[in-house]
Length: 243
Ligand code: IPE
Ligand code: IPE
Ligand code: MG
Picture 1 (cartoon, helix red, strand yellow):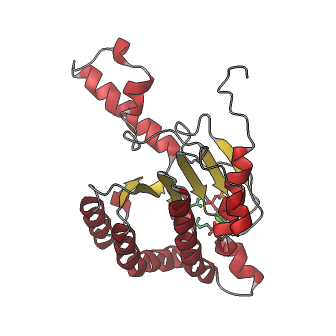
Picture 2 (cartoon, protein in one colour):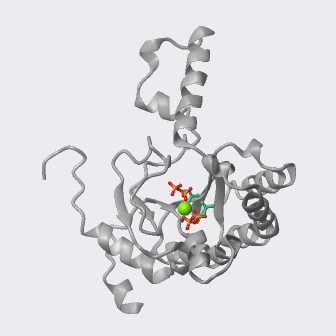
Picture 3 (cartoon, helix red, strand yellow):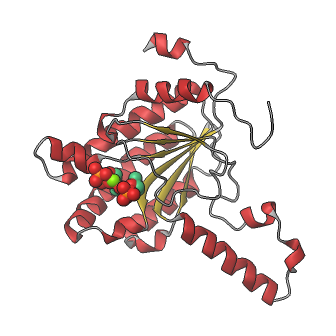
């Protein structure tokens, strides 16, 4: 592990990484267990990854916890996931607060139970002045929905005469996204071998580097994060320009 850490250039740490934490169900299935078992084991991977981010000093980390489309899963899986969120939120978000990290959520929180919403709002409020980093939890999140929502919001303001069409530019538009105060994503990591974005941060990741690994999320550890960062640091980011 120390060797891996030595390979990381501390002057080229991504400012914002986003992780598609995929493969919990397959991890459990491989062990002849219910999918829920994989979701339970995913928590340790989150803790380790956040510790790794803290060690590296990554300022922003977004975790894809639950997509809008994930609500279409069988009721039994949804119920167990909600139970898992409910029993774990308080203890883990409190620990994150103790590390002076700010917690933000993106997505349609209203779809969650009142208790879960209340807990999330409590921690968002409690951590709002924290300064050691920002953890963004994508919950009931859909990038297309986020973009539609922003578009409707802007259209309404224009209809009400508050703005005109010529006011719409990149920065105006981004100010209507869930992520309005957040920087663009530098690196997206997806576990489980799938090589797709699954409706995640379509606007914010326009120039993100993509890193795919076959590791299933419950097996993902700090060393895997470090490997992703080392790979990221080998990339030449051109943003459409020439070197
Ligand atoms: C990711 O793991 C967790 C959520 C989407 C909630 P999956 O549950 O998608 O696991 P696989 O991809 O089916 O193995
Ligand atoms: C993406 O994983 C969403 C999360 C990790 C929360 P999915 O398992 O839902 O994505 P697909 O269905 O493989 O595209
Ligand atoms: Mg999946």
